[in-house]
Length: 219
Image (tube, rainbow, N blue to C red; front, side, top):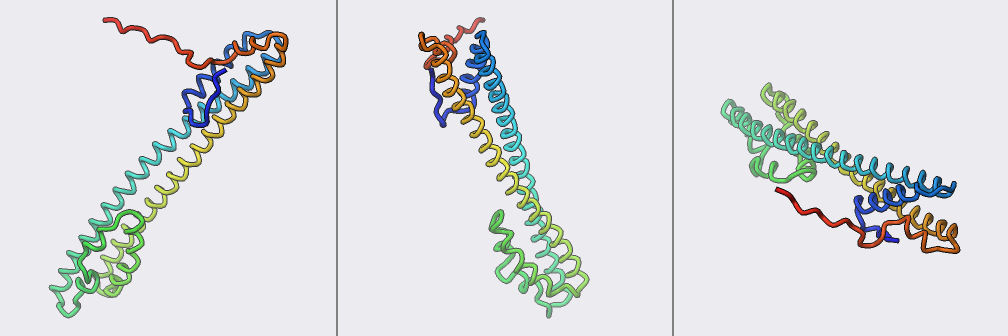
């Protein structure tokens, strides 16, 4: 019998499980029927968990794209804030708004990425809020808050999607382990069943290296 390893992937587990499931169905005893039904369920479960894992990975890619788009939108908003603060200073030079909000230039605010950028936004908002009483300042604060909230929600959604991928993969590993354990259990039970000829039990399991030769391409 080919013994699967924890490092073997889904194809190896499905192939070994499906082979055993089909072969054991040829037996005529209640034991053979029981083993068939158990493995059939486990192979189906692995397929379901593998699909769920793939779906989770697709969702994580989408969440990452949404997060990147929200980050780009936020950075564009920060650039707009910088430009509008320059207008505010032209209207009233005593405000010194641009230097107050961006003492080291707006580039420092947009250089960090992901959660690191999110952590810096609170201090930036506090500086921008100093001009909340001015019509331009109030509008800028509202625009900034909206972009910041969208970005935070996107970051949170991306993290949740990544967590879902990890959880889905753990379920795949559990389904693989169930197949390995069932194969070992079935092997022992079939050897007991064929105690006079224990080698017969081997026929119900995929053997090491058993693989059909590839056909030569035609045309």
